[in-house]
Length: 247
Image (spheres, rainbow, N blue to C red):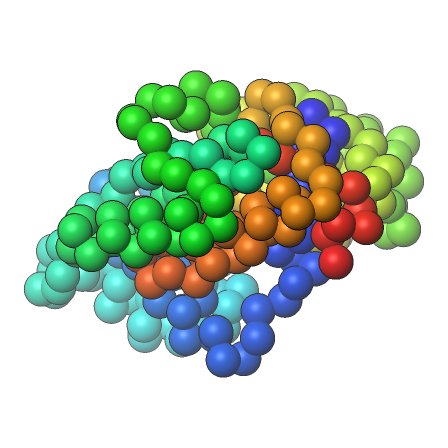
């Protein structure tokens, strides 16, 4: 799976500017609402809600905002009804792209997403066209300078992780889990004081497309602009690019 965390690592290195902080708040709060709506407001019985709350806290969202979002999701407070679904498409170089949407207006969202794809030489595709190229996995990354491969491997195996990959291009170790095991593995890492740089349940591509030059630039810009759209929660793609094209 080496390289499959490429976009996650790019996002981590390209920190959000303060001007975009409000958008980050909006996205994490929407995720809390939808998670509570789909699985209930008890995070001990709703792993997705637990992850959403942890992400909101990591972004320093106030506890009152998080609690209101949970109540809106469970129907205790009236609010906008968000739909969750994927758009599928292709970017430059034949890159497969999955766009996770949460919206209260499908027409607005479709127009914005379609325009953004076209702007960077891509196009939307029919449902099912690219989703089969991805599988849902828990993913952690660790800077190679922060831990030895032997120590990480031992902890990951003990925690029930599926795989540990050495990604020398990004200078990280990647740990993958089955989605239901994500929280138990994360709990083990936390208990041992092991500092990961990324911890998320993600759509991992089964294979990647190697991009260089203009295609690499266009795909990166497409991904960044899609993620800046208000109704887009996350973007996944199956590209791999040389480190020099990540800048």
